[in-house]
Amino acid sequence: MSSPLVIGFLATFALIAAIGAQNAFVLRQGIRGEHVIPVIALCTVSDLILIAAGIAGFGALITAHPGAVNVAKFGGALFLVGYGLLAARRAARPSALTASEKGPARLVDVLLTCAALTWLNPHVYLDTVVLLGALANEHRDERWLFGVGAVTASAVWFTGLGLGARRLAGLFATPLTWRILDGLIAVTMIALGLWMAVA
Image 1: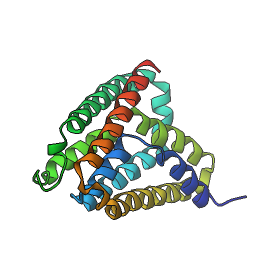
Image 2: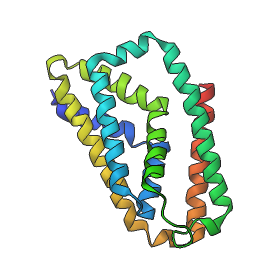
Image 3: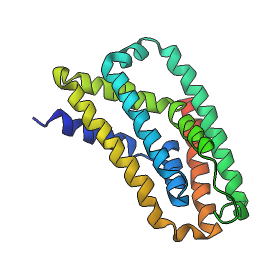
Image 4: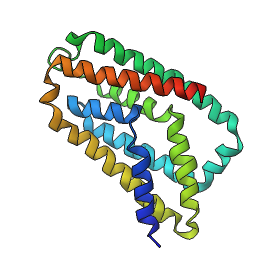
């Protein structure tokens, strides 16, 4: 039987690799080269807290109170649609998309946006607290070993996504490429928000 460490790593990697609001934001910051390390740290620490909460048993608590999930669901849907509309506005104004034409965003603004995309997304709770918490607790005495694997996968993913995106900086030196990226982000975020609201 595989080690809980390996299972935790693979399960988490599969969950967070899907395109979503948080990943799109990390990718965009990585390409722009703005506050990448703090963003990676915030995402990883957030996952650590959520995964630990799931392993500690909060997953069962949330499942027992679906009303809390519904509040997070509609709040998160509204936020995702709003963020998608902002991305659509950026895509419609290519002159605002190049780093040279727009000063770097303040660290506090970047971190607040990243935190909102992380903590207001109900899928984050379903994936980390409920699903990973349930999977971890299947390993009983070795559940925290599963958690170590899970958090390691999170750190590897966000570090690779944020720092690896810098290699694409040359490609994203033109407004057209930013327009395409922001257009894709807009479609993804709005679609996720609408799907979340009606699911």
